[in-house]
Image (cartoon, rainbow, N blue to C red; front, side):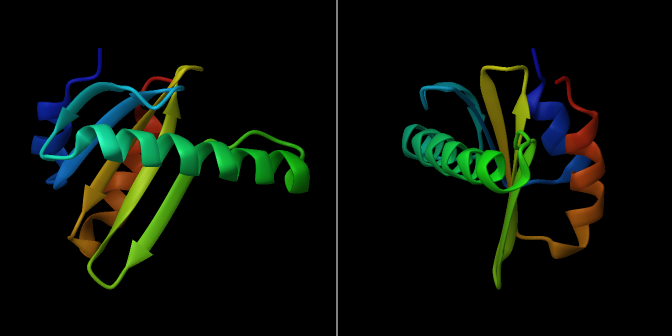
Length: 105
């Protein structure tokens, strides 16, 4: 099991959600709306995965989005779940990309 408190300590993210492939919350930290976020994460990841399959003939491993207020990164972990991290600290982007790549696949 992934330790969300350790991720938050190590990277200073604002929130973390782990969702299964149906958009159900497996675990969450730092968010009030984890059910909605899990569903939106799964939907976005599935749609982008379909696009990657069509255009690049591969599977989506990671999804990133950036705004003027921060960024989010979603990674597939195992074959049946996705982890989403959200941060308002742009200076943490490199650290989070490296950290997310090290999580169990």
